[in-house]
Length: 59
Image (cartoon, rainbow, N blue to C red; front, side):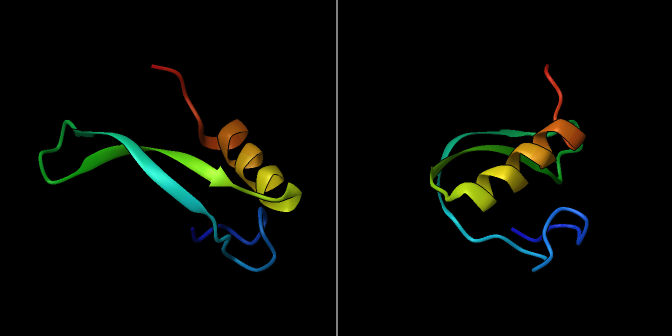
């Protein structure tokens, strides 16, 4: 996953994940997909939690 430099100095994190759901966005050219991350170390976990706090939303 490519990330902003403010979140990860490397600019990306690598992890295994499985798609759990997928649906078409309001714009029919796009889809939204939910993934379950399989394994991640502490640094990756911190980056993902930062992303969720900054950009996540509940619907």
